[in-house]
Image (cartoon, rainbow, N blue to C red):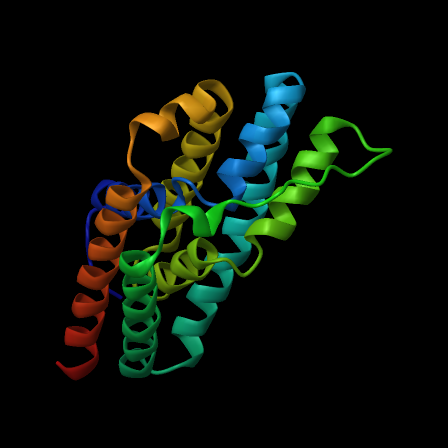
Length: 193
């Protein structure tokens, strides 16, 4: 395991996940639901979903690190992060627009929880969290990733489409793609070193 300060791990995880999540499905789900419902149930439902999803991702990543040799884990992380980086750099702004379908018969808290859980399960950010947890301290990774996802969703709820109209998604995707490629290079270096 790489020895790094927990604050540094949390901050780098926070930055990577926050940039990758801007304009993603879960933020669009939160914006859409908050446009028609009270904000707090949407934020709380999303927060609970992210707490659980990131815990699962960290447990998987840390478990994988214990069972799979470090060189193979680093190579897999390098491949995944490299593909995420290339995908983000090639992404067009309208690719992430998705129609949000509410679940009838549920409260907005439960609706948000279920929609975020379905939207994010196996998503690039969850896989990224698992990859980071396979080579870094799991608790700081979980804290940084969860804080990033909650912050991005809360921004989506409170600032809504105004924020996304002022910030170019293309530039956010370029920055997150570049960060993913940087993390991919670091993981590849660990795999061959």
